[in-house]
Image 1 (spheres, rainbow, N blue to C red):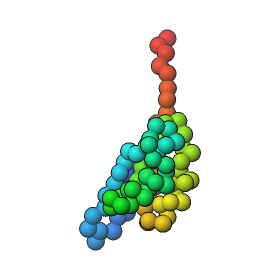
Image 2: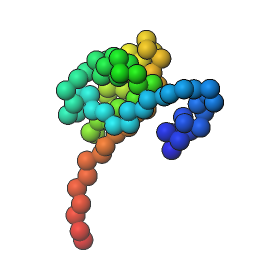
Image 3: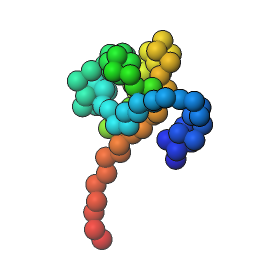
Length: 87
């Protein structure tokens, strides 16, 4: 689990790290572009931001680029649409 690996590698002297583990940019059903979402996360003190889109990872490159300006770590995630069909 990538989140657990990040948490275990945090410096012991860290006062506070804010995580947002489920955000949706406009690449699927969110209201903000990836870079705007990163900037808003920064303004709210977030240091680890998970991008969770539906059926795409297309917003990750823009998010990673924006996150470099603010020293935010991006955790790429995807929700995959499926159809269940019983036999």
